[in-house]
Image (cartoon, rainbow, N blue to C red; front, side, top):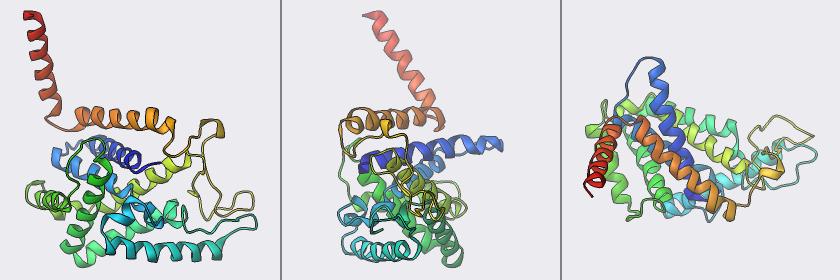
Length: 267
């Protein structure tokens, strides 16, 4: 899928998880916490494509993200070569390790371990990267200057105004990254190429079996189905979830609806 579809799917999943999961434990999360979790998920939903030289993630941070891509691509190819089955015929440089459940979980665990060891610098850096990617991915929906300055400002806002600040993200940051990466791979799995989500589980003599939906329901990346059905549906889902789960949004919408009804009645 395209970057905007990945970002909106990550935002939608993040809103749903952060908005509904705490209620199971009878906890009401703050608006800032929900939006931060969703923002990290949206940005992390672009991370798997660091294995593609022209992706949004690879181009977002200039030399830094280009270097990250130059590390990830050969690493993914190496893991592919070492674990491929008899019928695996690809190269593993794209839709490889970063598009697997194992890869997503490993990165989430690595972030949590790094934040436990080095604390706030890791938390701030991770938030900044994910929020900057989210801004870039969602820019097609809410146009604006896709500036790294905005991401820096949002990161500082989380530190200053979200309950618990940056330290409050330590318990869930890796989870949000893992979820974002997984929803990316799930999105790719319903396109024509599929994604090797279940690596290293061997299926039909392939360790990198491209898991996907039934072929009749797959669509081409950037094609008409994505442009006119998938992307709009994900966008609507994001706005609906914001209204449902972010505290303070529903009353504002209700007041706006009541005012509109009064205006229409007078007219």
